[in-house]
Length: 320
Image 1 (tube, rainbow, N blue to C red):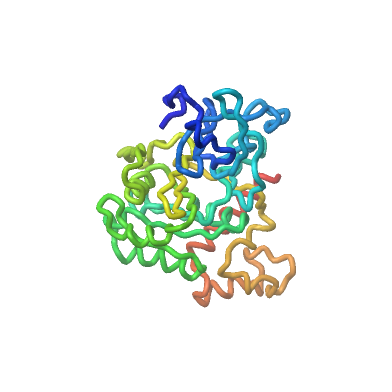
Image 2 (cartoon, rainbow, N blue to C red):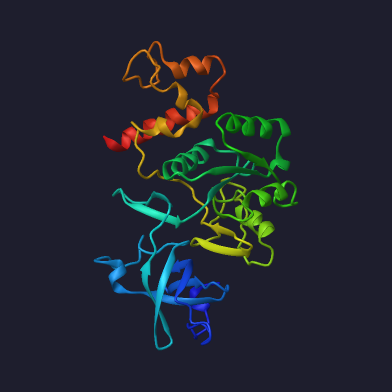
């Protein structure tokens, strides 16, 4: 539901008048909230929440628990409860700025496709790194596996299993394998992140039947998907299950992680850090590198290590 399409009455029924609510969506027209009874209504933020900023920015985000005051028939967000965690990314633009995507999530579900578009480990690993930085568990939902070879999908999932990351193969279009992910999200607040066109909205429509979500197709020429979700949106399914849809991304900038700390967020080689011959080893071509030794023995998968090297080079380039 677009905020501009919301009913004129922004106040909950008089007998409920909620004083606390959860942020469902933030848009230019206001803040969509969910009361404890599931009633949805619109509020605006007090100016003090934004400080000197002219927009909400990171002051109020999807998943936040807020305290309300009522002025006539208008709901006002008075305060935001402390966040137990937050998932962020680097905002687009030349200046390094944090963009908080959602707050108080229990897990991040990274949605990727085997085909149309082809699996891209770069973005998947970026999101896993960001989740590790935030201390949030993450899982991989590998979609559109019906369009490729089963062996290829199994190999990708095995790479991540070796890194301690759970992955699920599925086809959201037919529903095959979605039940396993549904069990993984039950009773949790899950944040869904993925490239445009990987079928994230189709998958969420399977998990949340009856909730209207826009679904787009992949451009046949470019192989890229169209943006169908315009802002993060929280779906409450009941019994503690909440799903947060986010706009499909073309790129994902890390926040809080640089080239010198990146290695700390790859769980499969934490036990090797500090074992290189040289204390300042960059895990590139140095002799006695513990990571390269593990790579040669097959203990580290080439796809993940190549992704790490590419991302580190990019982060170091940003710093220069």
